[in-house]
Amino acid sequence: MPRTKGDHEARRREVSAAVWQVMATRGFAGLTLRAVAAELGATTGLLTHYFPTKRALVAYALDLLEERTLARPRRTTGAGLASVRDALLDILPLTPEATDSNRIWVSSWDASLSDPELSADYARKYAQSRDRLRERVIAAQELGELPPGDPAEIASAAQAFVLGLVVQSLFDPAAYPPERQVQLLDDHLARLASARG
Image 1: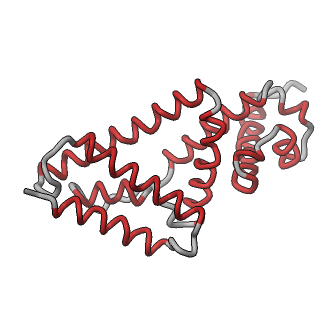
Image 2: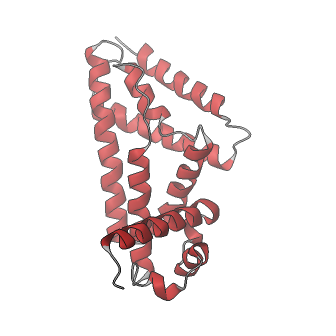
């Protein structure tokens, strides 16, 4: 009996879940066709129908990671500076799920940096994130909650701050529990806001 489109989609969802599980438990370095096949209880031969090469698997994993990141529920507590804060809080590893996602992102940097095409794709993703943050900064400036200045530079500095905080939190979670991460972010935003002329 021929396989239906529904069968293919169901299998693809199973493969996606297996890829995600391998990344969550082994990091990006542990993402191999063999590991995904073991997670699925399948042969590597079956996986080559989906991923003919390791690079195809890595590219798919990065797309899956971005898709899951964009699909996560987002905070929406207000406009202006509250909106900037929400966007930055959404990046931090404040929950087990967000910690897993950030661990996968950070572990994927090595694979991305060693491949010019993947590296360019990551640069594009981070630029898009800064652009979205810049729009929130502009709104906060218009409300007088952030100082005048180049909103792209303010967004870039805020993104750099929060990504640095992500890395510190992943390497030393005892020193950077969720409440401390939030406090450090709030202190950073308070310093930005107090710079108003």
